[in-house]
Length: 189
Image 1 (cartoon, helix red, strand yellow):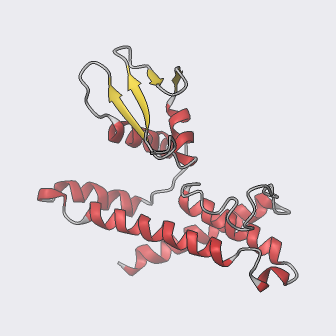
Image 2 (spheres, rainbow, N blue to C red; image 1 turned 180 degrees about the horizontal axis):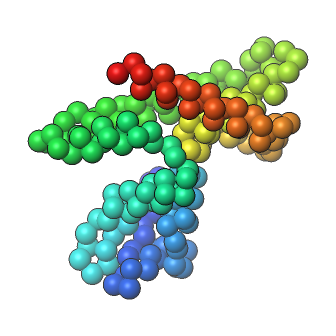
């Protein structure tokens, strides 16, 4: 099995410090979030008890990002998550979330394939700006997860990502559109 296919083993010491077993150094929650954004699975184990603490730390990473104003989860979704904990057996929420994220990753991969260099759409004037907007939108939607969009758009791992002109304005517009979509979805209930 390739080294990148195995989860990165992080050990938690009694002092609560987190130790990366591959690089033999201590890491922070932000480091772990970076590994995950780079499509690396992690497994966090308590050194003394052997308990798997991965879920606890992943939830902590999400909570810290949410508390810093990086709101990815709408309040309605958070309410539904809390309600799902009240249903005996957890209800269907875990399976629904897993299926939803699987479909999102699959859609990203298919979109990346469709936007490859061989695609005649790449010859259309202004295509690069459209591509950059789509990348920014998907990054905003997924919080950078999935990683399928980075090099997959052009089919070349060597090519650097080029920032869109007025990227900050585009991102603000995308966030506004996303908020509008979330508002419309909540009204559908």
